[in-house]
Amino acid sequence: MSGNSKGTKTFFDGHPIGSAHKRFLIIASLAYVFDQMNVINFGFIGPILMKNYGWTMQQFANVNSFNMLGMFIGALFGGWLADKIGRKKGLLTCILIFSLSSLANAAFTNYNIFLIMRTITGFGTIGMVTIAMAYISEMMPSESRGKYQALSIAVGVCGMPISAILAKVVIPLSYNSWRSVFVLGGLGLVITVVGSFWLKESPRWLVAKGRLDEAAKVLNEIVPDAQLPLNAVELAKSNNSGYIETFRVMFSSAYGKRTATLFIVVFGATLGSFYLSNFYPSIHAQMGFSQAVVLNLAIYQLFLNPVGDYLVSFISDNGGRKTPITVIFSIFGCLFIIQGLCSTVLSISIMLLLKGLFVSAAMTITWTYLAESYPTHIRTTASGILFGSGRLAASFLLFTVPVVYESYGYFGVNLVNGLIYIIPGIVVLFIGDSTAKVSLEELSPSISMKETSI
Image 1: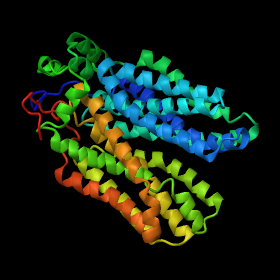
Image 2 (image 1 turned 180 degrees about the vertical axis):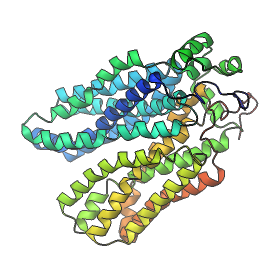
Image 3 (image 1 turned 90 degrees about the vertical axis):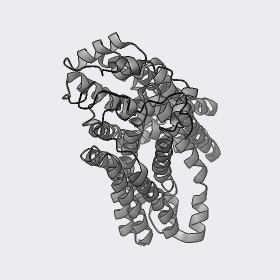
Image 4 (image 1 turned 60 degrees about the vertical axis):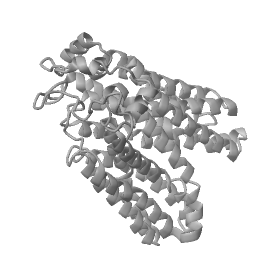
């Protein structure tokens, strides 16, 4: 293993959370809040643009598609950016990007401008998430990084119900009041200003770049009695963070099985969260749900997402990380299957609300697992590649929902969605690596140029 000597605590491991950590977590949590606002806000504005400005349903769909394209590019490029220029600069750059594009959406109603700006918004939001999940992993003690990742995202996903409530209250007030929803999303600019003063660069990234003196200085400012690993000079030799180096490491004999396992988990969490979510409203309307019930359930689920993330913070750092993943994925998958057996509005509503506790929790623990699984010099690039490719692969399978529903009915589509979670949960239990409470350096075996094939 490439890391510190056994029994020696380095970086932040074994140290309590200090004031610098708390400021960091505040910025990270607020970054997630504005990120989630900008992910969801166009869904509330689209109907207004169609009603007031003559947009077509196809134009609305096109903007959503290009937003997804921007997310894919943001996952790939955002991770690379953070490996090149640093976690702090990368994070603040992505926040700046989605904040400015949100303000631009508030100022214009032109379809082509919206298409461009929502693509840029997608780039910024997913780029920010890709960087933030690695940044948190590197800045927190190994004993509790899963806990603080979950708590940060628990605060962050509050951005979705906040945006939903604001849209419901403000949009009906006047012809142009919809613009305030985008203005709120643009207030992430404040974070870039405060973050430029509060955030510290990741000492791990500084070591990976060979800036050992600077790393020691920053580490001392955050935790005065913390120390760099004994093999810091060795870690500094692996400072190539390009795509070629990233793929070389990801598919080396040391990381090949890990990469395959991570892709299965990321793909399952991503496809599982999207597979039926956009189809449920129309399916349930056909089953007799009123439009009011459909909309209220969607809002109630948004409120339960942060509760699920808060609860998962208590178990994330136990069982080597892979055990909680298996438990959460399996329970979530079984809830889908049980829902498929339900036929009344009440029973289905109860299952939808229970699932609201798991959808964000499953994604959060997946992000935590992904962000701690690669060496520092390629961590965000590799995470972005898997995050983006998992999202892209999942998007190609959404077209199967109408086919499965037509052939196998309500139970069939819910069974498929359940298995999408259950199978990765089983895979990670048997072949996944245990990562919780282990130093990031111990999790990253050294590889030579000869070890480039699985």
